Each structure stands twice: as C-alpha cells, then as structure tokens.
Image (cartoon, one colour):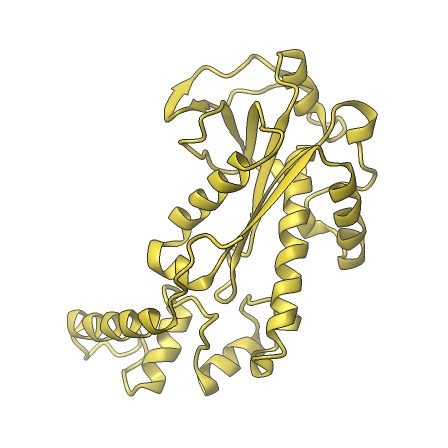
Length: 270
C-alpha cells in the first residue's frame, strides 16, 4: 500500500492533497477510484507526446474515463511500452469509452517562439480546460500545471500507473505518429515516418546534408548546429578558438530570422 504525498495545486496555490491510499501493485484506475471516494467523480489525466523530438509538433491530450467497469480498458498502459498495433487498437477503444477527451497540437514554430516547457504547460491547460463535461480533478504526468482552476496533482511516471494518464498518453502518441507519417510525403528525405522526428543516425545525416525544414525546432542544439554548418558558421561548441559570444550572437540572429520566416500565425492549433 502507498499513500499519495505529492502536492495539489489550485489556482496557483499549493494545498494539502487528499489523503489517498493506493496500491502500487494494483490495477490502473486505483487513483481515480480513490479520488471518486473523496468526492471527485470526473478525474482527467493529461500527457504529451513529442517532448524529446527535434522536429514536428508537441501533442498534448487529456482524457476522462468513466468510473467503474466501463472505464477499465484491458491492456491500457504507458504508450511508450506498447506496440504500434496495440496503441492504435486502444486509441479507438479510449475514444469510444471516454466521458471526454481533448487533443491539442502545438506546432514547432510555437515551441520555438515560447520554449518547450511554456508551450507544454499551455497545451496542458487548454486540453484539460476544454473537456466537456468538465473535469473536477486533474492528474498530470511528471510535473505540476498551475492555473487550471481545479485541483490537480502531478504524479511521477503517471503514464504507467494511472489509467486516465495512460489513456491520454495513447491519444497523444497515436495522433502525433499519424501527423509525422503524413509529413513524410512533403519531406521524404528526413524519414519522418520512421523516427517520428526523434534523432536517429539517418535523421542526423539528413540534417547535416539538407539542413532543417520548417518542421524542425530551431531551439534544439542539433538543429542549430546543422543550420550553422550550412551557413558557414563553425559547428557549435567545436571550435575553441572562436569567441563564444560572437558565435552565439551569429547563431541566435540566424535562428531568429529563420524562425520568423516559418512562424505559424495560429496559436495552439488543435
């Protein structure tokens, strides 16, 4: 048995969380059941996909599963440990069973404009706050999300231990994989359909040879390094004779210029 001890955030203020007892070796859904006993019947989980990729969007999803047996989905788990076919099968079942779900797609240009974590938090807020019916309590994977207007708890490795977060992780992962596969038709040289924007030897080779496309995140060091090489700048961090301040300014100017060219005017497109 384990007692939840993480902090609850309401409107930016930290409060003492409900005293919940949940079996760590029990089935997914234990946290939601405990919260239901405390009076929170609609519990939403939120998670994202694509945080570690250097290309493509960040996709954030939120999901409320029904209480009781209807909310129990066989095979539900962290999307990262499931096969593609299993994720796609569960994706359809989650959409059919959920009381509510929301998916938010944040383009690479928005990530460059605001930074990954800020963009992630904004996506989490939108996904959670647009659920209908509205959530009474939110569970997020890994880090707290202030400003939700509802009690919320961040749970370490929540995508592997909490059903509604696992469901959100699958919604986000399957949606993002489909987007990245679709990008392959326009930019086949990067093989987005294979690695989904994460760094692989083939992806790194394409970045070095062709340079980044509008779907690459200019804030990421490997993308900046590829941009610098193609524009006659020494590779970042590989020329100790170069004045770091001058090199940094040159790369920053180049990044800002190309980011503005590729900026999408829409904010937090869904």
